[in-house]
Structure formats: structure tokens, C-alpha cells
Length: 458
Image (cartoon, rainbow, N blue to C red):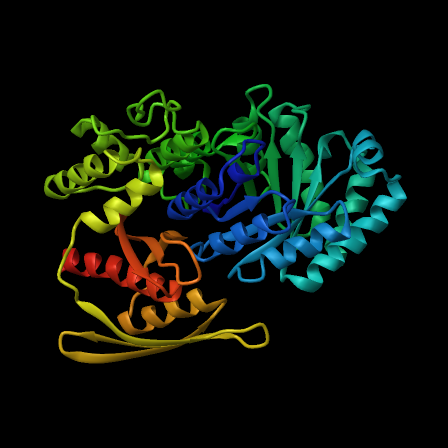
């Protein structure tokens, strides 16, 4: 049985996702066990690397692939973004058709061969895995394409992708083309078929029945549909001797969640507005009914009991009498009002060391069930160190869904508030902490959420 590599490029599509949406989509793709999660080139030198590093914190099994290739700086930025990734890959994507080389890469054929050697070598020097993607491969001159792939492999590429960007080949022709190139490549070959003519799944299927090793898929977008290709492998895989790692039993539900995110969460919940607010925004006024409040809470991802929902509703109406309750206010209300439980873990003291010439470290003491517990850790910044120290004491690492800090009073002695959301067993738990020391607020917020998890699980 041949196992097909599924490399998903939903996050590399031209659709615009928010930071939080990217993280949620990546989490869902990891959940259904895609082999590779593809990300676009790093364009914002501050925000994009942060997104990749945050995403990498919970993507443990899938390879995280970042595109680069048009210049040396793109390789440097991709490598920096992947620095904390368990399984990182740089994807060198370059056009190899005559038109693409001339007008996109501004290189003649021989210069392109030289550039491929150089840029793949640069990437290989900083990450263990490098993929070479031949954009518009089906419109390249085949002899030149073979030379380019040989150059990439000699420079260190571990796999190659052939892209039919313009959907210029019929499925049988595409499969034959891929087989010829695979004979030359000497490394695994993946295919990316455009669905411009509705034939992407057929092209991909015939290619992997031949000599291709993997398929580029997407939820939405213009390449092979993840859901359709998965169904095909599930329904006929035994007959055609093909399989994948995909968790097919929950795939369709997960794909619907991703589609919901990609469509801007339209029709996901009732319109939650008040006093002429923007449609879809969370803006609750004192007259908000229980249904609107419940829909707003569900939209944030919480699954509350009727008792907790009643507490949240009362607090929403109280706060809304003074100001409109938006998403930030509702998050804080849920954290402070819902599921208040006895504290299993209590903070006794903590010491945080941080600076620009030392690694941040955290040492803290908790009490639990009459016992004193100590935790020590280093991290990428003081808050990361503190959270790692907490995890070492608790003995479990929960998925960090969201973390926010803000000042709630003004001046040098301002009081800070921290709001944290942890995910356990697919359910969200929020915690809130307040302190003049924002690190103390963050630690208390984390413990507040953990105590809720422990109480419910016990």
C-alpha cells in the first residue's frame, strides 16, 4: 500500500486571514493529520515570524513549510521564522516557464539554473529540509526543467513539486509528464494541480497512482480539494493501493470549520449587534436577551453551562449599563464570572529574571492539596519562562489558545489585567489575573484557567 503525503496549502492561498485565524486553521490541520502545513513567504518582518513561531508551538507532527526563493533575504526571513519549529522546511518556489522566468524572476535560463543552486544551498545551510517547487512546470521546456530539478537536488533539495499552474494538461498527460520527471529527480515528487478546469483531483490521482509521492491540497483555493481527495482515498484506496495519514472520520467537520473561518464566519451565529453596530460584531447593550448573549459567548468559542451562562448574562447587562460590551469586555466577563471553582493550585511566590544578555528564567512556588511545589524553567521571554515553569509543576502542557494583557488604570503604578484561554479536550477555559506586576497577572490568569480544567476533569 502506497502512503500519499498530503501537503496542505490553505494558509498559502490569496485569502487574507487574521493572526488568530491562521493559528486556528493550523491547529485544525494538525488535528486531521496533514503531513505538511504550507505558509506563504514572510513579508512582514515582525508579524509573520511571530505567527510562524506561535503556530509551531502546537504543530508537533506536521512539517511547517515557509515559501522563499526570489531573493536571498526571503530565505533569511523564512529561516528566522522557523527557528523554533520542530519540523521546519523552506520551500524554494520559482517559475520555470519562459514567461515566468522573464517577467517574474527576471532571469534567463542559465542564470536561473545558477540561482537555483545558490538559493537552495543557502536554505539547506540553515534548515534540514528544503523543497524545490517548479511553478508553472507544465509550460516549461522539459529538458530545461530536468536540468533545473537536477541542480536543486544536487544543492540539497529533499523533494520536488511539479505545479500545473495554468491547468494546461489533461489528467493522463499530466501523469505521464510527472512520471518522466520523477525518473530524473531521484527524490520524492509532489504534484500541485490547478482546478481551473475542474480536473485537479483527477490529475492528482493519476499522478500518485504513477510515480508521484504526494499531493498539494487546499480547503477552498484553486488546487486539489482536501475533502474530495480524502474521500477518494477513503472510498477507493483499498482498490487502487493508496492510503494517507488523514483522520478521515472527522475530516469533513474540520473542513467545514476551516471554510467557516475562510468565509469570515458568515452565518456562523446570529448577528450580535446593538445600537447600529457593525453586523457580525459583538456589541451588547443592556437590552441584550439571553439568546444574543449565548450566541456571543459561543462565537468566542466557549461552551458554558446554563448556570455559568446566567452569571455571565447578569454581568453583561450590568457592565452594558455603563458601556457597550464588545469582544474584549465579554472575554473578561467570561473569565471572571463563569465556572468559578475552588483553587487546586495557589501561587505562593515567584522570581523572574530577564534581560537582553541573558535567557529569561522563572522560579515559582505553588501549593496544592497541602503540598508545596517548586518549578524552574527558562524560556523565550519572561512570560514564556513563567508558563513553562507552571507546566513543569502541573505536569501537563495545555494548548494556549489566546493571551491578552492590558492596563486597567493609568500612571506608573497602573494595575494590569491578563486574560488567558487554554484548551483541553477541545474545550476552552479562560482565566483572569490582576496585579500591578503584569507578570504576576499573567501567572494568576494561567492558574485561574488551570484550576477550572482540573476541577472539571476531576
